[in-house]
Length: 225
Image (cartoon, rainbow, N blue to C red; front, side, top):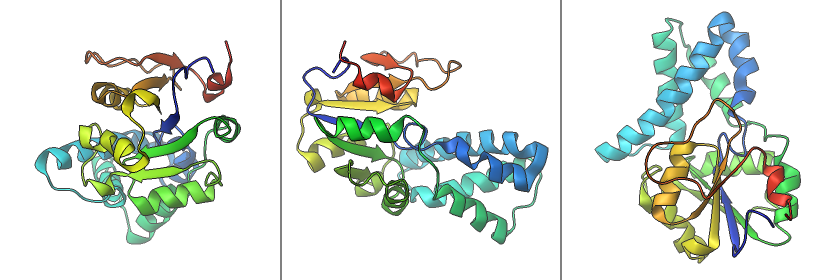
């Protein structure tokens, strides 16, 4: 296949790559009205920031808890109350995010020629539920969580999980992510990287470690030429 010469295994990031984090937007609009978009953007930004801060501080918390704390921050910043019932409702919907339309067919086809896996910041319970709900378990051989090292991407120990858990050496693994900072981390570690540019408003990082290739849709992985 066009983007995967010499590759034996393909690993994917989870949120924003396979699972559509924007699929929670309707629930946010239901609860927060015209403040929903701002809350969503702050929530996602702070969620990532907390993973980096906790890794630097060596104060790991599971991703579920970080996601709750980031939501509380977003609501505080927008000056909207976040009751326990509302928090529970939004977190329950975070557990059932849908996959993007290009995911299922691509994984099905790729699994005929490659071993597939996910490497995610999500704690194991979140990741397993997302995989099961979207019926991806028949195609995903490895669902790897940062729980195993209690650090978050882009720490090299996280990407090392691919080698230790699957046995594949980095040069034979393609790692696909829609998150540019994740691509830089994986490239720095030594994986072959494919940036999934889901938004034309997203730009590559200026960190010396670029993606080996760029695609606009996972369907492009099925191209032969």
